[in-house]
Length: 418
Image (cartoon, rainbow, N blue to C red; front, side, top):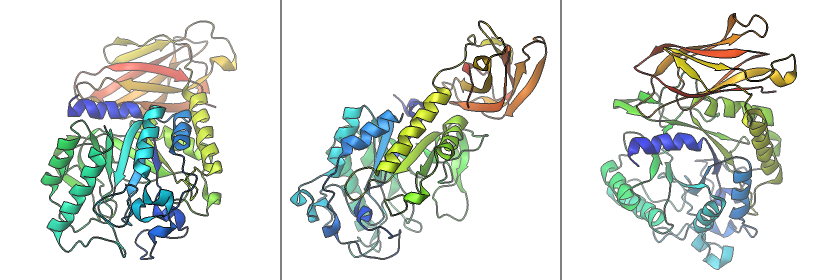
């Protein structure tokens, strides 16, 4: 699978779960860069059960998962040889435990793609100094090499650029090491390092309705003062990372748990706008998902399945010039079962994203030869969800108003989303 095919395949993953877990899980109220010490002796998740995390993720509809192997605080969830600040210095399993291994094995058992997060930056008492750039790069490569050597095939490597502003890494050397160890890996990082997956530009879970896959600038990294212009336009599918609560790590803030409807809206405006949806849950100090969070996640999965699991009975799309048509099949009488209020449209991306503007028309239930416009959009890409008021349409037309070449819609499905 070449680089372009890997990125297309990533879009098929659609929905992932982020697990922020580490030393911070034992210090509610602490924040990034607050300078408060978090001694490794506090890390002791006596009920750690990664299998339960991944079983919940799978049941809720996720297809990939990512673990924060080392966050900005520098604490490593595996027994690294290159830092004293890791699970090896904790009472958990008498310093013999390895959260990364348990997570990876649980992903494979659940049939989920394996993602590992690594933050190069760190602060505090145990931090490696940024003053010696070469020494720090060596440390960076050594730790990444452990993660990419000791756990079998890793599908996705997620770099957090936050906190690295002003530090010049030896990018070519680091990327070469990654590609040598895992040639098929996909990366989320600064695209000037490696062309992989791009950040959507916010951590609220939303992508714009106009969402081109080939871009000449990005919002990466988070703390940058302006958009980053790329040396050339790149095909970079986007991912929308977001939190189920107001914090990434577990905290005493269950009251901030988002409602199913808000989370469902985030799904519709991420996956439904041609990006991936990456929802974070912070396992607690027991090493388990908080019960309320797990139940909310499963309820979201049921909401998505209820809305988009079973399409209405329409024909396959027929193309004539720039118009694609689907026709209602069977009885179209005045029943709620015949209502629809959403189309899910997908584009053939094998030769790139082509559509830049389109309109959706619904033909009326009685005056079947007459149509009304119900939606107007820009890009289609992997998937676009087009929402409008419920009606009993006899057929739908999707008209391509403009494109960057020959276009093909691979599918159009109608739904009634309550």
